Amino acid sequence: MRALFWIALGLVLVAWLSRKNRKVAAASQPQSAPRAVTEQMLPCRHCGLHIPASEAIICSDGIAFCSAEHQRLSFSS
Image (tube, rainbow, N blue to C red):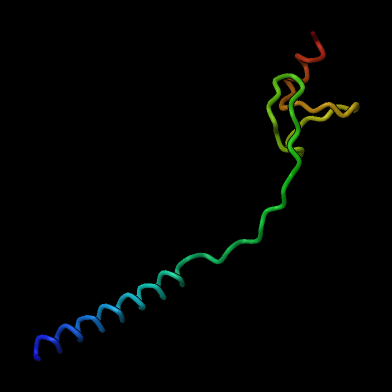
């Protein structure tokens, strides 16, 4: 009977500690950040690499390039 008491006490202690650990882990996780706004990806006319529209070099005729060098190479050939 005494062994049964100690086993039950041990199970209660394990359950209490695991519940406490879950609460601490949940509190330490960062809250979900707002979702990022998606941005259109444009292919470079010279190499085909897709880059965000905000980082692309776009000519007056709407053609996108990933760098000034690719823009220069595309128009020199």
